[in-house]
Length: 114
Image (tube, rainbow, N blue to C red):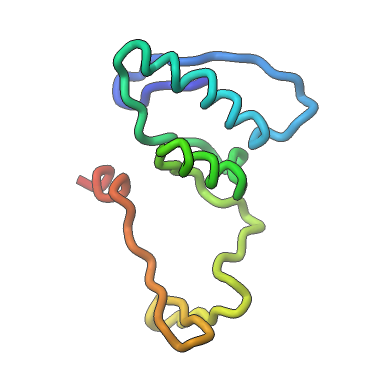
């Protein structure tokens, strides 16, 4: 089920077999819904989903579709490349060349906070 979170309107509903994980259905739903919204003159920017839809493939797909995915990483995600070191005191990562990599807030996060 897809719901417009601003207006609480159901935008898409579907059923699937239980043979795949949830994250393997996300791209199909987007491919079906996005063109339908476009024909109605509706622009889709952000996709909110729970952790079960988390996967690198889905994040890359959403980026190609120009959708901002707000999907939390599942509990097994450890963050950062193995060659990066996390500086807990300063809350940033340090790359192998000694440069600092900081997290930058996404536009959607700023909008949600205001």
